Length: 253
Image (cartoon, rainbow, N blue to C red; front, top):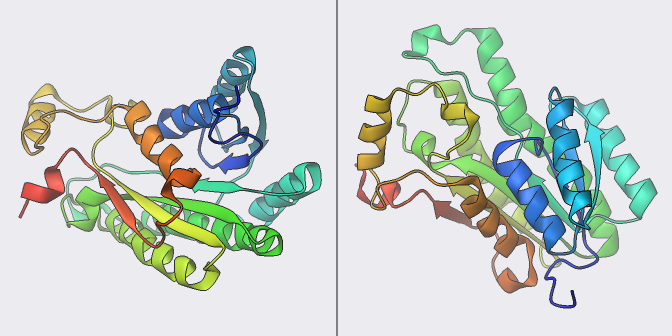
């Protein structure tokens, strides 16, 4: 269709074998992008996403890479550059979370892994994408943070610190890569994904009550925000964190 807003674009979405990343991959492909579906452990999920895209007439490939490993990240971006000659969109969606009830449960191994996946990985990918985008003098980078953790809600200080770092990372790269490359961040609340599948009903009701919209987001709603930031519809926005948390940040202390 001629009105596809990402027609002809190459988009790499990390951690896109499930959840928000998978929804974004399908939506971006629907809007005309060729999507690189990145995964680390869940190959079956990545295959399902690629199959869903191609069966609907879209284009996608899957690439395995641990975003916290500089060599694997370098190889992933080299493949994108070699196969397609460009990269228009990077979405740093890959992340992980360990549920803990106290900071005392966080040991050094957990700290290092959470920071490596949630912050170092985004930095490594931004760095690689920047080289391609600077050469072509265009591109969009979208990072992902967690608003509740930036607020200091929750016991996992490692996850919170890493996600808070995404905001500063976004601003830093936005300043350094302007004016031809835009860098923004999506600040998430709670999303209906498998990450909260073990949450008790009592806890769900409590957390819903903290939000003005009184519900959690669907992955597709976050994908819509990512699509806006990836497209020319947001051509005058850079260095910003777009909060998509159902109004929780507005009313929380």
